[in-house]
Length: 316
Ligand code: UDP
Image 1: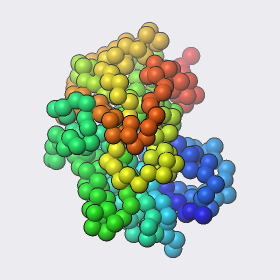
Image 2: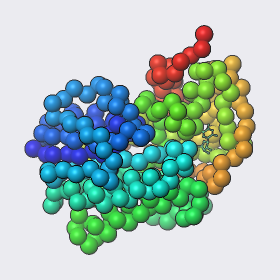
Image 3: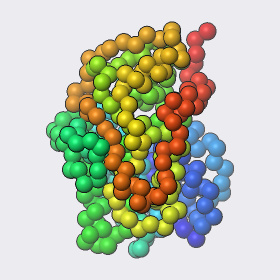
């Protein structure tokens, strides 16, 4: 039986991964570590499982007498307004957190890490394959996130190359859906929250910038298959996301079409906001054959709206 450690398990993506881990019957202990900075304990409310133990701790300082067969490191803020206001803490959670977690891995164990499409920065080729080395500014306003993710990738691949550590590095493109904090600050959750509250939908810049948004249910299915279900030992990096690229203004207009009371307003652009982002899924199709983002964007947004409706106070 396996002992599994999930860091960041109260977060948006982490808590969905926790649900999937609880479905396994080859685990006898699942330790979920989270400092509840961006994660929320209510994200685990649906879990009632004697094998699960929650520990409120920073990922950097978590200690345990147990060594783990599998460790998943999802302990990082992912939204620009959150990581930009606490950049050093963000770097620490990723980098120092990964170093700490490596020490808790059993010999022969595997560590999975959710890296990001932000490693591609403001890409000059599209779609972005894993071989693209990115266009990132290591002193720019997004560097705490981009560069710490890149640094952890470097750490894990060196551990793999030099020490034979089993690693699985996935680069997630934009993810949306239930359990995103209403105050998370990213485009889809902001637009839905604003629309539900009858407030203006805020576009930063002219809205021509693009992203490729994947619904959480599709993304966590890929994570489950890659991290444990398909039995692959591929170390990554592996792009996972939706390869349908949509502009920010299209997203805003789609949501506004269902909430006509909310006007669209244009605010100043965010410094160094990437102009485009779209995964090349060639490798993903080989490693996870048959996996696709099955939930169309329009359906996913409407499903998410129903979840946010319960979270957000709608004025009478
Ligand atoms: N964005 C926007 N209005 C918002 C929130 C975000 O126009 O209220 C833009 C943001 O500037 C970026 C895109 O939407 O161009 C995606 O932003 P998000 O924060 O969702 O993800 P990331 O920038 O990390 O890809």
